[in-house]
Image 1 (spheres, rainbow, N blue to C red):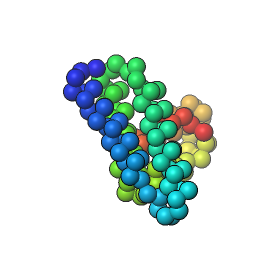
Image 2 (image 1 turned 90 degrees about the horizontal axis):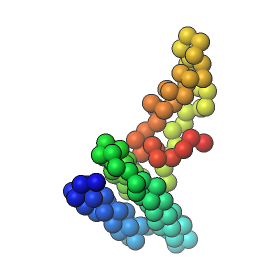
Image 3 (image 1 turned 60 degrees about the vertical axis):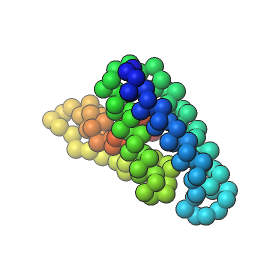
Length: 121
């Protein structure tokens, strides 16, 4: 990891914790605010530790873009939780007999950038 990349990742990490420190739930209830603050901190720690060993600059850049997208969406909608994709498991059209493989490939392509680090449910 280059020095500039390391610096940007660390500044992004600190930015997430600053957002969590000043976070206010949209409902205005203090218990909701505390729950959402804990979620933000736990999610950041989990994802940053999960990607700590990445060495490929392209993958690191994609993770940075995902984090920035999640921050932007979270601040805009005042919701720290990832947004759902609303795509049923086998809801995409098949292509000439390659049913399951084609659907899995299309689902992977349809996954938004802010959900790339989450596994399929």
